[in-house]
Length: 85
Ligand SMILES: Cc1cc2nc3c(=O)[nH]c(=O)nc-3n(C[C@H](O)[C@H](O)[C@H](O)COP(=O)(O)OP(=O)(O)OC[C@H]3O[C@@H](n4cnc5c(N)ncnc54)[C@H](O)[C@@H]3O)c2cc1C
Image (cartoon, rainbow, N blue to C red):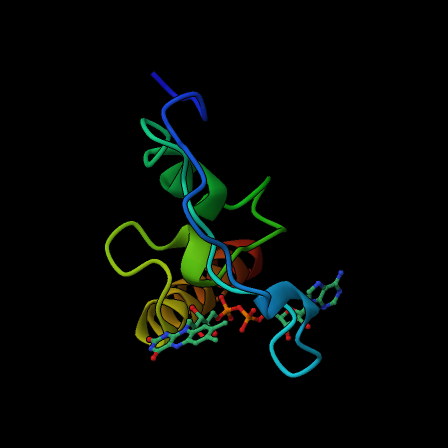
């Protein structure tokens, strides 16, 4: 089940109002973690997605963002090779 019904707010940061942060982490609602894989998938071999939110194992982290950038770059190179063949 993918739902926000299971969440209850206990505390919240003000990072979204901090001009030097402008936000915090992505999060998947309970039961929605598989959506990260969907978010990571290229669209029609022309649009490629990176960023911590597309990481299935290191979301919410800088290294997760970095790894997904490498993955997306590999996807772009593979698509260019197919287009050139
Ligand atoms: C306060 C804080 C502390 C953290 N501490 C740690 C830590 O100790 N260790 C750790 O591993 N991670 C930490 N993180 C998490 C880490 O910073 C993020 O997971 C990581 O930076 C995400 O990288 P990203 O490239 O996916 O997204 P971002 O770094 O958010 O990059 C997204 C970029 O897209 C730009 N953008 C947004 N909308 C548009 C648009 N419409 N058009 C053009 N550009 C757009 C934004 O300006 C931004 O530059 C912390 C995060 C916060 C907020």
